[in-house]
Length: 206
Length: 222
Image (cartoon, rainbow over all chains, first blue to last red):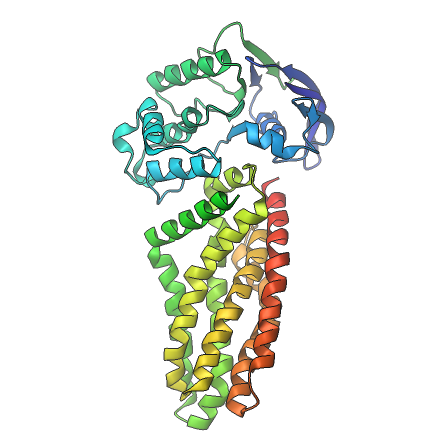
């Protein structure tokens, strides 16, 4: 469903990568590997259309995303390195805003269920500024429990700052997403229990 | 689309309510700057009345500018701006919601306070009403034009000063017609022409500014 051909990226004058080609089809996960500065985040940002690629093409559902960006955006959930949470709003307000913006008519019970699934049920009415780093990450990840209709998950270091229990929970949720025919592209430095058999690897540095 | 507009607007207003101190500073800045002039210039009624429109408007420009870095700055820093850009909704709609929230929080209070401050300058009657209307028409222009400056300087070092250099020259027409409306009323020639030009400027800004802001935001996020 996601076809990438001969993708190249430049940062300033420095070429980051070139000639990257891969396919991700329904039910598959692409694990992007590489050392720091090899362009993993840049690749993810290009995939969701935040940055332009130097060369190459990206097709989603058979259409080049340059012409049909809305189709891709309607299907994609991007979780950046920054959590995208407002410090002054409570956890539940942040999530409800995200859900509304994404056009998901998420009732209070669904938001609560998502928060409980991430182990933040008791912190729901706390302003985000009072959360620890790991709890913030969990609050950002709670979007994954809300946005089950989004087919393509693009996750930048989703496991960073999480405790072992949360890592397992997220890995299981990823597995369920793939099982349901979803796609995922993610970067991680940790050895995590990614769903076997459905995971493909892409190394950026050679 | 409408839902996204309301969601962004409501979030920005709620966020500002939680951080009221930030917004109150620019309103107090306006009050203090305007109040300094009668103290500095001395109690000469005719002189004060002539200067009043210009002083109120210049203070309004500066106060509106003071709050500009916040419009997109905090969203940029915490990553919510990326999430806003990545929604399937048109970015211009989202931008318009943010600018409307900025106007409600920074422009409307200025327009409400200005008639009270005008008393210090001996303005009374019709000119005060015109000042209020002119501010109501002019401050959304300030928010829209300022939004372009705020978006262009996003992530730039020394962005605060740069905004002033970018935006203040663009505020000049608003200043001329806004202050001119009140002066014309004082002089007895009627403010209709000036107010119409302000309204026309507002309409042009509503059409062009969100588009320019959206383009600048996309560049800033690349």
